[in-house]
Length: 321
Image (cartoon, rainbow, N blue to C red; front, side, top):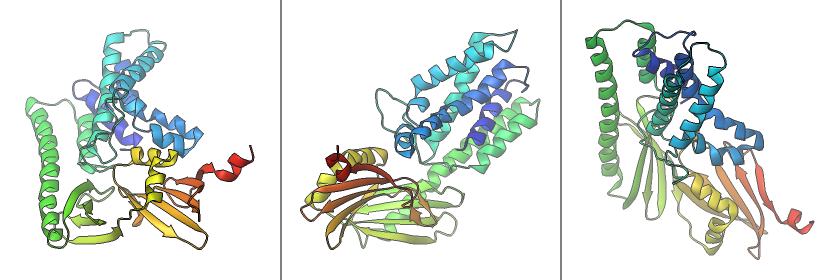
């Protein structure tokens, strides 16, 4: 989710039992705490290569949330005469926890267990911009005081919505398996929420010899195949996977396709993250350029677009040292 959505959720969380006001350090702490995990954006000053390696890792983990909550609480204590460290820390930490929880519910995932485990966990249930969650949060902020019945209805709607998303994804999984099982032996099927459309889900089907990327409408069950990508196998591909950029990319995304492009005087190994698209073009890529003897000439990371190039290795630069 975007920082504004997270801030709204943090304020809504505090509003469940309190009146939101600027005079309350705990209220401000809940909002700042709910935004604070995205402070990892400062890593972007060192470039997208560094930023994407750390995004949703350290600051989204339980230890990271505790450290950020402590720092925010200390800073807030300087501006309020009446101050309860425990109360402000608790609401700040709960705000941060809400951030990681809702990021866990979407397809990007979070490394909750860092530094013990850097793996990002995700439930693939909610969109990056989820209108239902935002509307419930705004209701919590605006309409007060509330009765026990109103609290019960809010909890009920939230629970039913999440369960609906879970069962909807399961239902579509069965439908997609039925569509492809006759033509392909399915090894893995990943279904993820669309970034902006509540009624659409993105999917990636992995078979023995290819990847199929598409989207399906949860109401009409209209299935649109966007890309079919043939799997490639070659020693030069295995060599690329062991390279610095290859290790980085395989840690960055659990689902990627590798293509081998042969040109006149060189080979190009291109890795493509299959999870995220913009206008049906994939966002993240890594390219490895080899000469005819299959020696690496250079490697380039392309975050967000093939037009955005970050050179990781260049043989000419190494030779000139």
